[in-house]
Image (cartoon, rainbow over all chains, first blue to last red; front, side):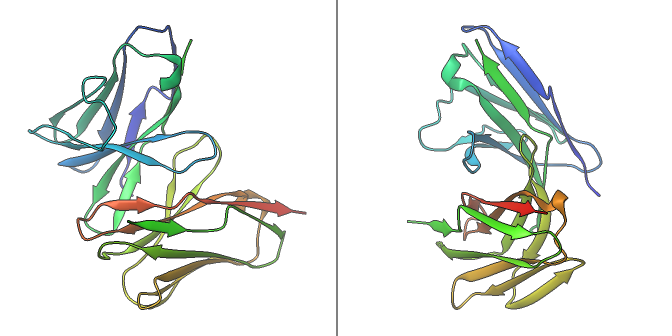
Length: 114
Length: 109
């Protein structure tokens, strides 16, 4: 089946630094990728929709200057958490749709800001 | 507003059958998904329903009634490894996935 690779799987960073998370579709082209954040015991919250060759679409309440998204190619989207703070600590997950019927998820990135 | 409701937690016994319900109110409907998510991992796809009826896939089955805004996921012959959260999600008229909060399923020996 289709595979979406996300890395790093986990990262610990100091407060005020930036962290980049990569999401790659390995065997299919993804013109769209979704970035989610998931806090413990909660469901996935859509942060933004990444579109290849154009600007990302951010959900209400998500700061576009803090969560920078770049979709440079049909197989790669990146999320950069800038000037990270402890409240940004969360599980970040990307997904790429394949047709209308399925979406494949990356492995997720556990971000801890200390 | 858009809403997906599913029970927060369920408990079942190994070898038994469990049904996890999901009701939804969304602006439009373009399919309903069930995902399994183990703690600390990303969700994995289980099933997709867009027409009314039952879809069977091994030990897992998913049912949809569009007129009632209702779906369920049926898990048979439960195994300990089935302990996980089960997420119901609906694709709305904009083809955006609306997620339920998930049902934590606890399997006891």
